[in-house]
Amino acid sequence: MGILGLGVSFRRAPVELLERLAFTDDDLTKAYRLAIDQPGIEEAVILSTCNRVEIYGAVATYHAGFLGLKRVLSETGGVAADELSDPLYSHWERDAADHLFEVAAGLDSMVLGETQIHAQVREALRRAAAEGAAGAALTGVFHSAARAGRRVRQETSLGAAPDAFVELGADLATDALGGLRGSDVLVVGAGQMAALAVKHLHERGVGPTRILNRSLEHARALAVRTNAAHGDLQQLPGALTHADLVVSATGAAGHVVDDGMVATAMQQRRGRPLVFVDLAVPRDIDPRCADIDGVTLLDIAALRDGVAAHSPETAEDIAQARRLVEDEVGRWLSRRRGEELAPVIKALRRHGDAVVHAELERVRTRLVALDPAEREAVESAVRGVAAKLLHDPIVGMKERIEPAREREVALLLAQLLGLSDVEPS
Image 1 (cartoon, rainbow, N blue to C red):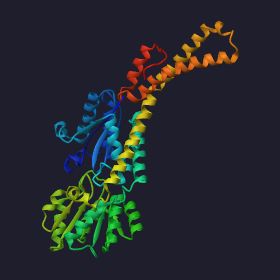
Image 2: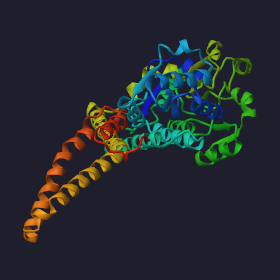
Image 3: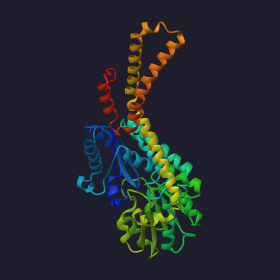
Image 4: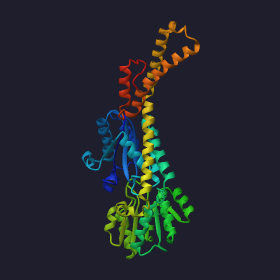
């Protein structure tokens, strides 16, 4: 089985396409069923975040795996296969591990070192396992990727500013409103990004803050921690008539705020401007709201250009992080080769021991004239010769076999050497 990763990300895909491909909880269940039904796909893990939608598979061959994984992305997201042709990327074996490890380390994010992705990688594996789609191959590579991400955060300064999106959104909102101090703020959502938004906005001296969420309990929990008011989404239309700034960061599959709702609110605001900062993918705010007089809409697409300026990492930070990733990829490859080759190596050593034993038995009568020390020296020398003869082939197998062909080449070697006790996996 080889490891194959397919996906689209913010680097080459427009926000509209990422929105269509983004997986909801219900989508994931359907997608995993579809994935494991595809010929040649043994395992699958789906990673769906604001910046990317990727699917990793343990596959029989590259070609069959590519077609199967692409079908999962296309059919689950309702996106025609030809729409994926340009933005779709694929990574095979070591390249797939390199990419996944960099993703987990935050090196492939819009905000370098962002910390959310590390948890998202671990959650993707957990969900795949719960759906019965993750086996030993993908569990191993995802665990190693999580380790790489953890090391990068512990051993470098990356991740010092995981909330750069919120900071940039607040900066742009400040420009649009002429200042935030005393502004009436509405936060839609109660997750990690919403909590970051409340924290940053309070640091800037905003006025009354209200948190609305589909789950009233979650809204209340965040409101208690941040000394804010709270409510459910039914209060949203009325809340829009009072707010100066609306920050939205939910996990909803569709728009939470539509243009009709905003148009009605603007009629009651008597010319007061309203700024939206939409931090969600799929987007919470209908893009058509930007066409309404008095409305400023800042979404992920608008934040992309400026977010890099909020990343304080140096070239040395990034270089050190990449060295850590490379080290962890090397460890994963060594472990994987060892696991694949272990049966053949054990059989090869058993074969060597058997040959030594047979040869010593053949000349046993000639050795009786030797004293015990001399006999032991002869036997030790014979065993040493056998061990040295086996050493280079074993090391060569571990170091030189092409990724994804370890088992195939090892079994061929076993057949050539007549190691009949090694069975294909």
